[in-house]
Length: 183
Image (cartoon, rainbow, N blue to C red):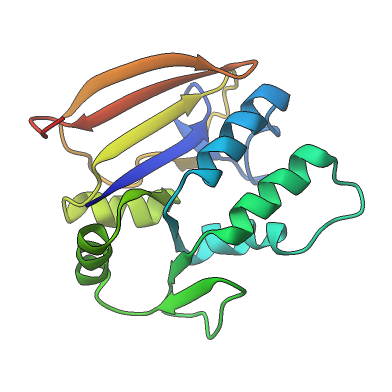
């Protein structure tokens, strides 16, 4: 059975993006962490906004270094499922879904093994409401945005802290499970 994980970088005050679009890019160590993370995923669930942002990785850019090429290759290889009521099509290795988010996620969790990443706070809020997220990974970076899109876009369940660790040059990852969930 697959595990559904929602994890994102965020500011110390809990925002994943501000009016300019987000936090500063990660340093080399944090980038490598996310490269390895994506390489190990079974797949990725997106809402429209996060998918639009991540499509950047579909085509090589002339200014990329080896680290960016490595991330793009890992990302491109993963199956992606995009939930949107407005999109008409999606790019390579992606499937567009319009209805029954809960039913679809329950099926892929039952049919797959490994971790499935949830990308984006709005989608994660809906999956939280449905009780389908198994783990939350909050990557705090030393920035204060003051406003913007929060990590928790909706009410969250009570959580149990299961791990803390420093990641990369400037991030701390806190990992939580919904309270009372089996290990």
